[in-house]
Image (cartoon, rainbow, N blue to C red; front, side, top):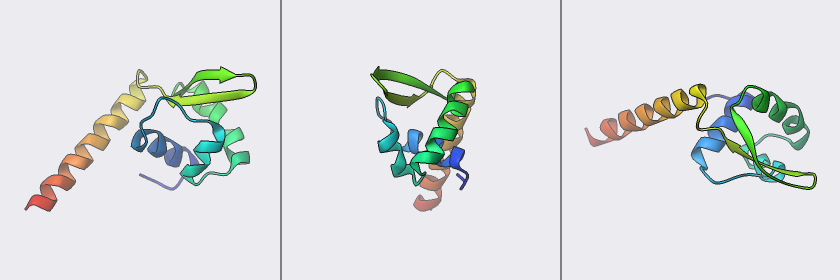
Length: 90
């Protein structure tokens, strides 16, 4: 949905719905590790993601499906997908 670091990460979390992700795994969203160190705290602070588990220094993150903004993003994704399906059927 966009090229900013924040949208790349939110897109990644939504498109790859899984229990949790480590910082190393989140680099699959084409976001550098050092950038993740700056961005993840802001996403946590705004409640868009949460720490699901922690093992020592390793934190495992997941999208916060209870957050109202995340809920609206999911609705938007579903609507876009529905429109794409309809467009391809016609």
